[in-house]
Amino acid sequence: MEPSRKQNKISELFTEGFAGLGKVNNSSEATNSASVQGQVRQLIRALEDCTRLVSNVDMFSTNECLEEVSSHNLRYLLLPALLGKLTLKLSTDISGRCEVVKLADAYFKDFLRRCRDYGAIEHEAVMPYLEENEEGVETNENVPLISRDRNADLVTMVHKRSNKIKQFQEEKEREQRLKELQAIANGEFADDELIREYHMTLLKSYIAQSLEEISSLQQEKNILQHMEQLNKESAEYDSEILEAQRPPSRRPPPSKKGLMPVIITKDQAMKQVFGAGYPSLPVMTVDEFYEQRVQQGIFPVGQASGCGLGPCSHSHEHGQAAGVDIDPEIVKEYHDERDDPATLARNRAMDDYKDDHRRGEGNTYNRS
Image (tube, rainbow, N blue to C red; front, side, top):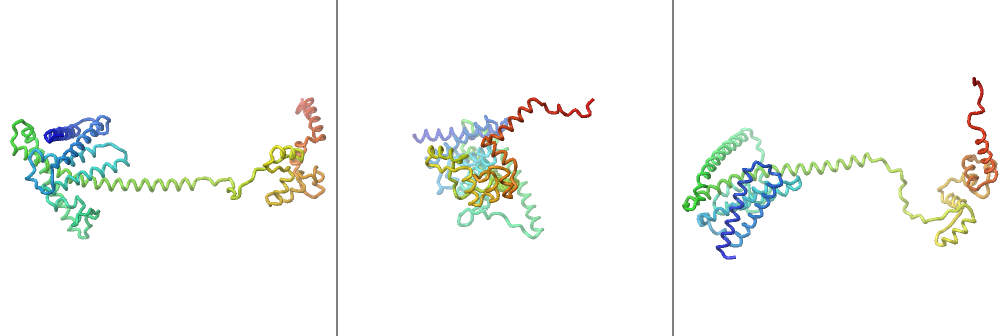
């Protein structure tokens, strides 16, 4: 691209961004609306492109002073400040707001460094806001110490208040002067001195605004960091409460030794059948399985000889003869599983009796 075309492109992009920022500031629509957010992002892209073109043509140099910059090129010093203003208008959540604040803070500080390098602002006035020491290394130790002298604190507060009032009055005068110069500077036959005065006044106005923005952003960063710490502590506390309220698990702890699958059969005949079909799995009867568990200490020894599961005890009488109190339900279940003829006959007789005699029909005592 030719130098003249680059200059025209830079001027168009800057005018688009600068005029668009004014429209966004004067808009009655909510900043977080979709249309305004789309416009803000478009303006940011335009000013970013303008910044890249200004850097490619080497418009500014640290070896020159403010008087050496042409009147028309002075306005391009405002690019970082304009980007910082637009960045603060981006609508995000709390986590995204931290990144927005950091980016805007970097833009405003870059703008103040350029103005300091060109002599537009004194080094002592801007040094506390840039967080730099004498070697030029950034630090976070610019927080003023709290004085123990109450009178000194009062004097400092009065001095700050008078400075605030003075800065407010100066800003009002600059705004009034900018309105007067803007119409003249944008005319076709504008004088070079008026254009330079307009851009210098605009530069001083954005310097004052950037100092205020950096102070506000520092407070907002502290608040966001505090909120992030509170959210982290709250999440940890909630996890501890949930862990404490969680009921203990009723499941036994998992065994370190893996269990080998076993096919349990009722009797020796089923053992031979399943053993032939599943040669890779161990097969044992219920009695063998119970005896194995007794030897391992898992089942009690008292039930091994009288529970009715072993081959040597098949009835309730044998258990009583051995001196062991056997649960009748276990004996009943044992006989039901093995289809005991006596048990089957007794159950069928009871079913026939219940069919012929309904419940309660024989209880005729004291009936009228």
